[in-house]
Length: 405
Image: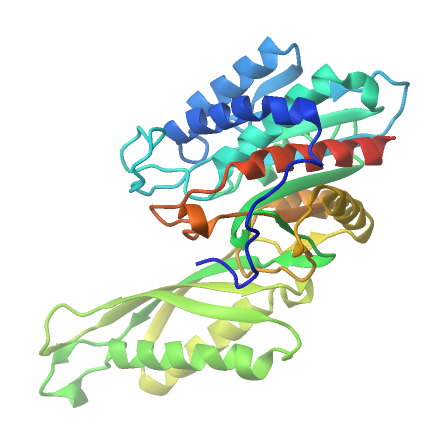
């Protein structure tokens, strides 16, 4: 569930400034309001309306309806004129999961749930916007806060970029965070280079020749062929990828057959591929089809193959990562503090923003086992320690002040 890093007995917010500590109850309230009304990608109309109402209430200039339901808020510092532009990104969508938590703020939408912390990301971004608008004299330059739809799929970052959210004014750097139940509250996972993996997908249909289970010589057994393909695919990482490069091929679905004594004529599989090294782009598609074609040919079967990339790897810029790390060290007080080599094979379309401008995406520890808040992401009982919300706002605000000033 949660990592083996020792959890702090208590988390102090003494390095979180008083105005943010005072704002924290409202940030919690916003998070819980969003949590009660989860919406899937490109359908986040209630969430976008709530965000827009808050921004309008605070007098923050913003544009709605970007890539369907995305929002971009713009806050300009008043200390003195500067051309620096820093973007902060938060995702706003939920998942098709039925919530099992018995809490007052549980999901009111049947079959939908904020099971990955995006409600917290949105609340942190709102808290950051509120503070910066109230304290514009503390920084220079321009801050763009990007509320992005559809991170869980099919991906809202690309259409927002295509809509020009990084332009007019041009963004110099971008930061974002992910509340992370694989780390305890009071920690930050931040590293230069690859943080999260590229995600690619494929479907394969094996076309054999069905028949009676007692007469296999008259058939081409699609299940046998599919099973050999699944096994052979594991040799790609074991024997074709440099062992220094992490990668994984996972066949998550395999469907075939209708009856125990009938040899199936078709078998269908669906899978994902994950890797960190951008140089591997295109390699897996070619090698996987070579293996499928070879196994099918050896058995007299045919196949249909579909392969598509989903997200690129999340790769952090060294300079912006050092900025985030230095800020996190100021805010986090526990002995564990900064986890420098925190990585995951999970994917994130924050990667597309990082392909366009230098930036840093980091993990903010949010698990608290003592409060039973350590269930993994995408679990129907996922929840997190809301103390992390104030810490997230403080980190973002300090990044703004350091980057712009």
